[in-house]
Amino acid sequence: MKKHNRVKAIIVATSNKHKLKEIQDILKVPISSFNFPVTENGKTFEANAIKKAKAACQKTGQTAIADDSGLEVKCLDGKPGVRSARFAGPNPTPEKLCNKLLKTIRNTKYGIRKAQFVCVIAIAYPNGKTKTVKGICRGKIIHEMRGNKGFSYDPVFVPSGYKKTFAEMSPITKNRLSHRGRALRKLKRSF
Image 1 (spheres, rainbow, N blue to C red):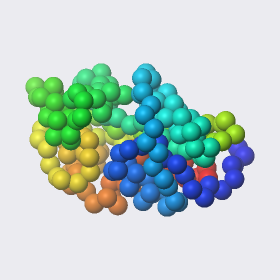
Image 2 (image 1 turned 90 degrees about the vertical axis):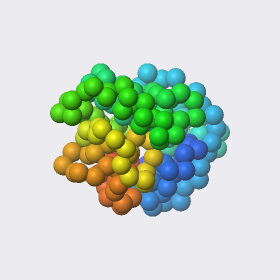
Image 3 (image 1 turned 30 degrees about the vertical axis):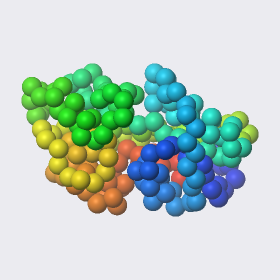
Image 4 (image 1 turned 180 degrees about the vertical axis):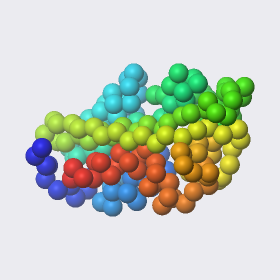
C-alpha cells in the first residue's frame, strides 16, 4: 500500500476534550480541534467516523480525523453500541451513563457481563480519499462504579486480564490497552 505524505498536523473533528487529549498523547503530532456539528445518524461506527472526518476535511481543506466509539455489551446484544453517548439521554455525564447501564443489567450474573469497547477512526485527506482503522478492547462490566479518571463508561469497564477499571488506571496504561489507543497506533503507522 502506498503511504501518504508525512502528516505534520491533523484536524480532529471532536469537541470532547478527553478524546482530544488521548489522541494528542498517542499520535504525538500537532492537532487542532474542529467542532462542526455533524448528525451522527449512521448505523455503524465506520459510517459516523467517515461522515465526521469528511465534513472536517471539506470545511478546513486539511487532513482530518474523527472517531466513533462505543461500548458493546454482550448480554444486551451489542447495545448501547453506536448510541453509547446517547444511551442515557441528552447531555450525559459518566455517572448517568454508568448508572443507566448498571440498572439495565443489574440482574445479569457477573460471568456473562462481557463487553467490548470499539473505536473506528476515519482519516479524510484533501484529495478525497478516506481510510478507517479499528481498535477493540474486550473486558467486562462490574457491579459498581470505581475510579475517577477517564470518561464515559470507564468507571464500570475492566479490560480482560486486569482488575482495575479504566477509570482507576493511569492515562498511560489506559492508552496502551484501550480501543482508541489501539486504533490510533494503527493509524499512526500509515502516516
